Length: 446
Ligand code: FES
Image 1 (cartoon, rainbow, N blue to C red):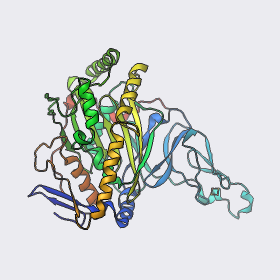
Image 2: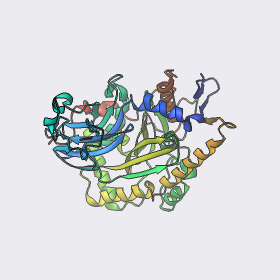
Image 3: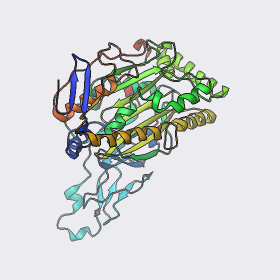
């Protein structure tokens, strides 16, 4: 089937994307309305708000929002814009506040959104407190401490939207009985390339050997087997890994874990002890999926979770224009790690990711080069994403996960549905897992 944006030719196993979608201002505006105004978007993790009245501000879906825990302990996502004339209610990136006071004319709001004070209130015929009452609340929901917002009241709820892909959050969160925490600090950087190029790159196993060869060589020198080059299957996942899709554009690639580069004996035994506790709680099959498989996952449209065993990151991708993108990235770690093991994970992750890592700058260079290449889009109109199409079980370095994402993008933009390609693959025996994961937060409230 061909739409104006993609060619999805099942007979010839060919999938192509029109390069106009990476450059066109009209497409960019349409994405704003049809995707970012209507889809579940990741905001933050509840471990970033450990106390009542804690807040973070961040940009989500083209809006500034306040992600906070109010005075009752409830987590909220609120628009960071004053009912009066639009200035930001909160200009700090994080803090603890019961009241947000707009700096422009001083309207003040409770951290649960009610407008409570207007300077010179007596000059109004009817008090703005009675007219406006409170900030409007977008739809918010969470799964195991991961909070999402949807700026539309229409469409499926979060649970339905995520579907079975929630097990990816489980595999991350279940590394420790105490759950996970987002570590303080973040990476933020921009690139001169379309946001969808970084989405593709985040679940692209194909580029790893070429773009990240320096990292691969370092691993080989350290006696480690680089990812996807081993010779043993893990829970049915072959050495080359595999990709799988969950519907709604959510997809992952997974492969047998690639070891613990530079880990000392202490770090290794600490991780082995964590794994042993997971075996006791969930059984061998699930513990193996948690600790011995690596995953790069994308949640449509722009949230990425990467768990490479030795380090984990969350990444959000914000379009700033057709050819400009801002990236935010946070390191996460199991709670309860001793200091040495935590330091190992942070150091190791920084060796790979981040502005000075062995991976991120090379990725940015590749994406910016591709964006420049789209200058010739009239002569070369289509990009190819066909690798592994037609395989019953595409490998991690095939491109199923990207096609799954693109089909959802196409559906959001055109309303035309393109059927999924493969049945979901679950890399563990569900019998051993805990029921009702989403019922309880792992953090004490308040
Ligand atoms: Fe906020 Fe005027 S814009 S008080």
